Length: 448
Ligand SMILES: Cc1cc2nc3c(=O)[nH]c(=O)nc-3n(C[C@H](O)[C@H](O)[C@H](O)COP(=O)(O)OP(=O)(O)OC[C@H]3O[C@@H](n4cnc5c(N)ncnc54)[C@H](O)[C@@H]3O)c2cc1C
Image (cartoon, rainbow, N blue to C red):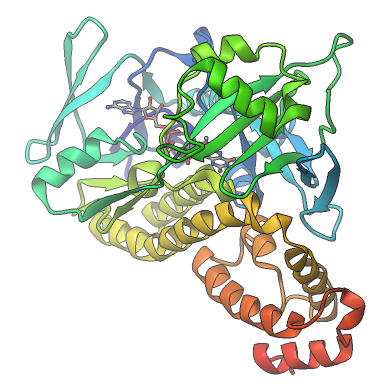
């Protein structure tokens, strides 16, 4: 493999992992990041502090030899802890096997671990360098530092890992029509926190992802290694209730107190956080073309930012990095390798975008419906009876990286129709004749 100059824009989660992978192959890798080194300064408050890491992301970390390093600060979450309006809780496990858990990881810690790994592989990391212009004919990039001084850099291939607002994507768009569209969700998010108690212990069960589903909106909480929880309120922007209507901290506090009294009782920093934390934007980004011949390619959020309700944006971005790393190693015709990357990843990116939107309805609303729980119970029976053939869609996405997202979506749709049919007129699992249900599933799913 020739050692060529590969340039990556954005030292976030995807960029730093990809840099480590490509440098390990012997490439000379330059990684540019607009912000200063996060290992030397604190992370701004209120910006998706922790993330759910699932098997796809873990597989990519394993491929990079970094899984053990990340596991040291990852916390397992075995299921959803549902908090109803009366403060009653109910744990709904994610899977029936003990190892079917997802992991809460601190974004800052993860990014730092990936930057360390990139540096260990010999990547040249250039902090405080914001991409401002790209000349694809001359294969030259222009970066600005915080003093607005310009820096020039030449590349063979430039890879855009610069997130949803990607500057590289905008520059590529000036060369060819990438077919970019953005669909705003109309809901935003606000991060709050539940700190440890006076003994330094967790104030709620740390082995769960907590959800307060309220129909049109919801709050969730993920544990952190310091025994705190990061809570995220998801709410319409213009609705009633909505972020605009509740702009005044006192109005928001009253709303939270009314809807989530059990959580608010655990939030001593609420007033300060309501004053300081911004409301974040949520939307889905669709890009029809990710590649500019053999010169540029987009991946991660720069190519397919999605809403966070399946906890898969980073996981999908990590899958991208492994796919690109392998393709660049296997196919020395770079333009063809990049096209193959786009062709194989794009249908999967579209599929997880659709499933992430659907999961918002599940988390904020459907989990309150007894029929949903009946269908979950039946799903588990079918999974036990038809192992490998009937796998709940959530499990396919979170625990089965060997099943591409597009296949998980198609199989999931078929299974949903089946579950609807089998639970019609039934209130409890005992009302369903399991043998007949399994036989019907076999005939629908084509099991011998
Ligand atoms: C509220 C919320 C919760 C989420 N929860 C989850 C979850 O539980 N699980 C999950 O898998 N995903 C989750 N996600 C999605 C996840 O955060 C993203 O998919 C992931 O960060 C994408 O990684 P990336 O490297 O592509 O982009 P980013 O992480 O956005 O990194 C982009 C990097 O590029 C840099 N950059 C930008 N512009 C320039 C420029 N012009 N020049 C140089 N550098 C630049 C940025 O500073 C940044 O470091 C969540 C997202 C949100 C908003």
